Image 1: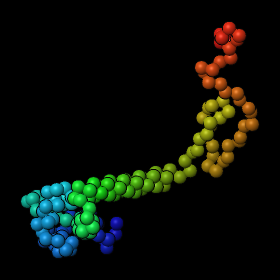
Image 2 (image 1 turned 120 degrees about the vertical axis):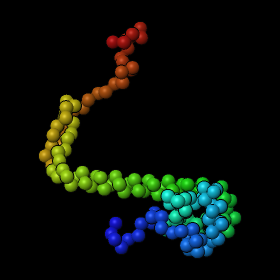
Image 3 (image 1 turned 180 degrees about the horizontal axis):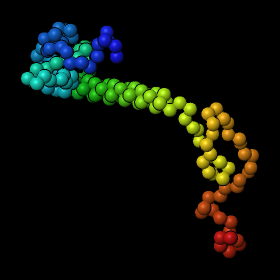
Image 4 (image 1 turned 90 degrees about the horizontal axis):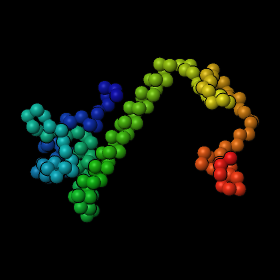
Length: 152
């Protein structure tokens, strides 16, 4: 993140500012906090601090509520959106870790299974020679049986 980007999760707005940005009364924000709809961060002194994402959520709550959606339904929707946000953050972190791993090990070896099932190391860019042998596979429980029903 560059210096010019604002972290949407940074708790920077006091309740009065968040209320003004979301076009709500501060008491409404306190009620939503008590209900668990939009739960801001707290300072050491206990004051509420809202992020820009919280303000977006407050606007969404107001819109959904004005369309007739119940507060419990809105709470569930916000919880699901939060989960999606967490998963997207996790995917971004994992992609960053994968990129770092790839960059730290250029030319890492590639492995394949040999004809006998052994592990074979390949050079980067090498292709596996395909075998054309036909192998008959039978599940362990389905053996050939003689006329008396005994396994052969």
